[in-house]
Image 1 (cartoon, rainbow over the protein chains, first blue to last red):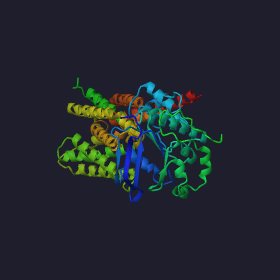
Image 2 (cartoon, each protein chain N blue to C red):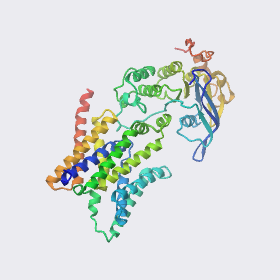
Image 3 (cartoon, rainbow over the protein chains, first blue to last red):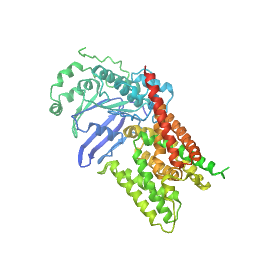
Image 4 (tube, helix red, strand yellow):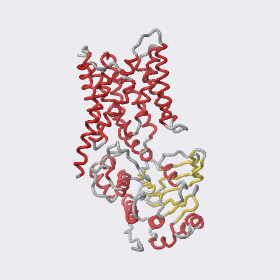
Length: 255
Length: 267
């Protein structure tokens, strides 16, 4: 796979998705390129998770098509994961599903996800934040071309989720992968994304975070109240994913 | 050596134990206990059909178990909850099976042998079927192990890794039907689910990984099979139920050990 910009990894064409008689998504056209961070925002029930699940192949579209680069490796971090208490599962074992890896690779993946080496801990004994990071580590271990995160910071506190998103940006530069995520935390999202897609049964508007934030479609859904938070958290996104970028993002966060 | 009925019984018990225990772990992890029970109960209809058409009992039981398991897998989520559907299908199949057996006037059969097993009557050909079936189940499980575990944790994680969870479900369904068919002779239709679930449940507190749980469950199942055979021979009790009693005792012991050891570890 050529390591360059502007390789389209996955692309949907006129995607319709139904749950029984309900049409959840209509006419979704979406393309993701290597190296970009794209965030989907939208109200509850707008089809965000459904879209992600269609991209990983868990839901068959009613109409339209999904094209992906042959051999595309997808790392998926679900919204929440319940491991049945009857299933004993160490972190080491969980990271080795479905592909087994050397201990050093596990160590690296845990480090990338911002965790100490807790390979021998039971998954059930992890804190919420550690659990989410282990899910991220598992998604990273196959060195994915595309990382898909579905509200991965649910249950994390504000500093925790801010740190999580900083990790994602670092991971993007390290692995040179595309990142597609769903989030409710607008201010964090806006500062960490190259492109934002506003979804509500269909794509209402998309573009750079500041463009979307001032779009009337976006305002209609989220109001203009988020503008203040946005201004505080915005950082420079003028770098055109040149990937050797030295991360001088000027965080103007209030703390 | 195989001419001794006790040796044949021991080998039959071991064969079933070694196939049922690791599969039983998946039954426990995926909360399919009732599913296993229902498939087993339905197989009595297969026994009746096999006797009626003078086919092999193994083939009859396997066919009905397979039909039952796939029907339930397919129908689930189409208006009925899984347990309702299983309740309807399992008990109807059991009832139809019992009625069908009674209609077979030309064959005099001992129904008890199929309901509770008749391990002491295992012939050499039965041994071949039991070990053949057990080997097939273990091969399936080892071959699909990683994919089965991933699917068990989350179907979405499986999809994202390019695994088809429906195919893995089919593998388990097939393995379950096989275990039911080979276990009828050993523990009987009514107690097959016990051989699936009890060893796995007993192994849980002693295990840190899924593989360890499957291995310990196999050891416990093997110990229950051999111990149960020994005790039933000494006390002249029915063998199938005695095996299950030993397994249940081992479960109680392991629960006791974990209740004593766990708090000590925490402090």
